[in-house]
Image 1 (cartoon, rainbow, N blue to C red):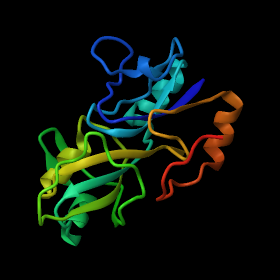
Image 2 (tube, rainbow, N blue to C red):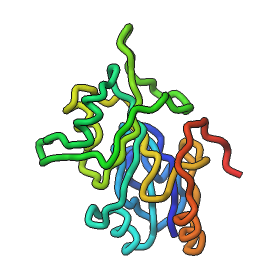
Image 3 (spheres, rainbow, N blue to C red):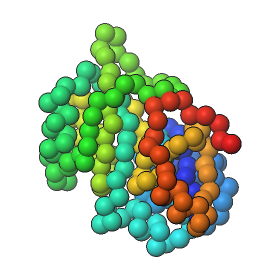
Image 4 (spheres, helix red, strand yellow):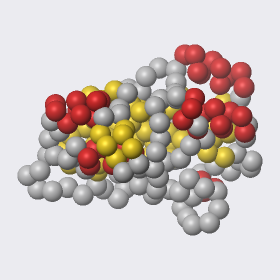
Length: 197
């Protein structure tokens, strides 16, 4: 079984302990996250009850890409984007974006609570893809080039995307449908998420 979940801001990637956590959104026993999103991040989280699939999706050795929409503080420069693609040095080693580009603000709902906004200071949006997932890596990378992250939304993990999921909603894929979705998933679109059919 594979579950695609649109994790809201502020939700912890665990089923017990501090709240809010996954148990408030996914009433399915025996599934665990394949990778994580920190409390301050939003977007696609994959969960499974299959240990081998969990390892295949989560472990960096398998080279799965993860794509994010990143709202940063300031008018991001071409040189900062290029530096993210050539690599920045973090305290746990170099980090390189597989791809990074400036995008128009996506048509998504405002965050609750809203991001901090500074008067007369613009913000920018990036589409950034990584093939690893170190702790708070995107945030540390954008800070390293002078543009702190204000909002972070994972829109794709491997070939799985948010597609038409609402914030806080999930979709269960069985073994057959997982293969079908893996082969045919479209890229995320810059539009407001619509209700699941």
